[in-house]
Image (tube, rainbow, N blue to C red; front, side, top):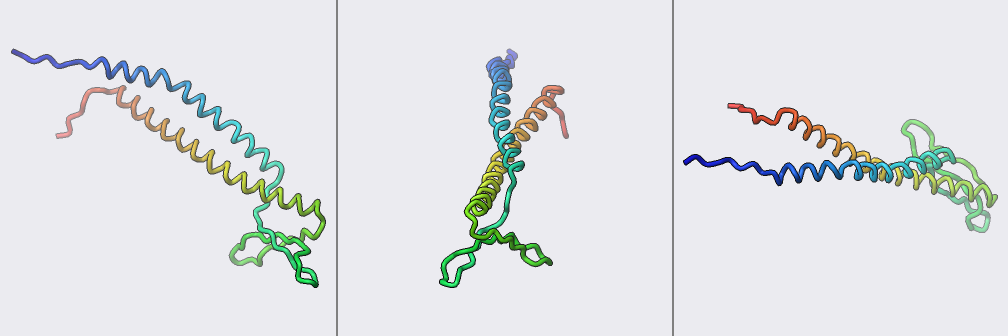
Length: 140
């Protein structure tokens, strides 16, 4: 007596359920990415400073004048910008440094979300290519 090969409808129903949930999940991912991208643009437009604070002491040895020390670029002298003792200029410089830090953190987060989206796209492309030709190939 010949044995019947079972057709597992549960797998096709499972796959259909996964596919039905994809548009909502992709929308949610896009909704996560949009405000991050908008904030990145805001920060870039406001101005970023990639430097560290250096305080030059006065005659008594107390910090008095603020300078911005930028990262070293090989073959060039280190850039130093004078900010001074003006509280408004000091606050503006510190705010720009904070914006640069926030910008970097958001770029890392947006990169991770883009990587997730790229992985999903690759997996979906592979799945659709498998469904285009579902017959198993013989390689021997």
